[in-house]
Image 1: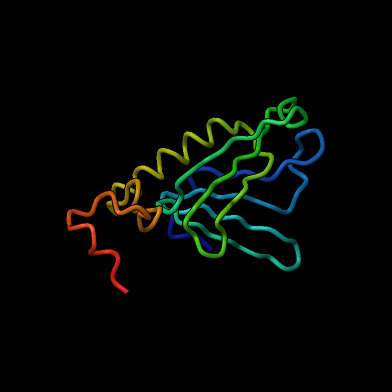
Image 2: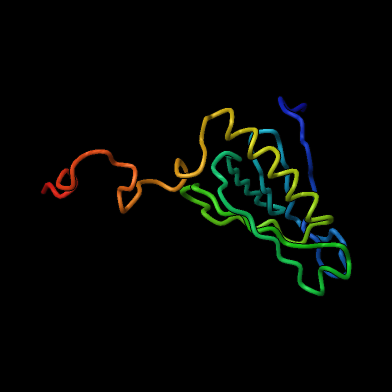
Length: 136
């Protein structure tokens, strides 16, 4: 069975000594990040790249010794607001790749900055009079 898309990056969650002995696999396409886990019961979770608004890289000593790290992605996805890509090889390269395609997707959908954060609470961008937001 051939997929309709091409994977830009794929890796497995690393366990002891940085070996890929896990049933969790990560796939990056041009538009989404897919996490597939399980052996008998497989669960896939997808996150659209344009919905990612923050990234964090964790490099604990145990993972760093084997060239691994964990990436935490914060998104506006309803079911998965925080996605962790745990213990993957060359995590800095992966973050750069994700960042590149997140920006490409944001440009495609014209979403930048506050588009992902929702309504502004202090109404700084409002050009109307002071009482327009005090209606009940």
